[in-house]
Amino acid sequence: MKWTVNIRKEIKVAFALLTVFTLIAFSERERGGTVCKDVVVELDNVNENHFLDEADVLKLVESGGRRIKGVTLEKVNLKEIERKIRLDKHISDAQLYNDLKGNLVVSVELRRPIARIVQEDAPDAYIAEDGVVMSVSEKYTSRVVLISGSYVKRLLESEDLTKTEEGKQILAMIDFIRGDDFWRAQIAQMDINASGKITLYPQVTAQRVEFGKPDNFEEKFRKLMIFYKEILPQRGWTRYERVNLEYEGQIIAE
Image (tube, rainbow, N blue to C red):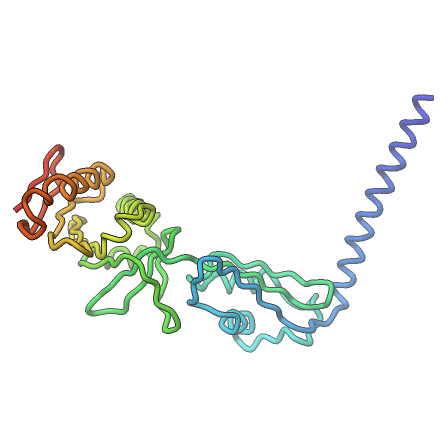
């Protein structure tokens, strides 16, 4: 009796596998014989970044005179198109597939800018939340903290802040600022000199904040908060021109 039950189970499993393989084979045949009716762009833009729109993505898909519409889907190299789309630094990911209507669906996820590199002698750029440096867009300007100073040349050359330890520290500091409501509203600009030392320029108070290198930044921001809450209310908000947080256990104000 037990062997009869086992045989029935094996037959059911074999039938299920046969069904799956049949559907896959049918899907492949359908894909091969289906002519692409249209290219549908799905833009993941939950962060409301408008550096690229559907028309821009379509241009990337059809770059180099590549015809998609009206071509049988088996002749479309989806992996190659995905690779070329991902070369655009504004795009973090791209997935291509065909739907049941015969359309080629291009699903694109955009990077989110968290800081803007500003230069006097060269074009600006954005730093994305994953550390990638990407160009600005004429279509959209993101309101983020500004990064200036001679050190930004290194950031631009690296093209990705996660490639160096200094870049990782700067990225972590930017993330800390944008993750705190007060600091996000207060810190307008980070100026980084050739040696990697940072000077902060606040939105409200007039003091120049000499921050030092971005190591131990949480402790330095804690000291800056003490300066704002305990020292300035007693001495006056315009009394000091600069505050130095570079030295451990000290707040130097002049």
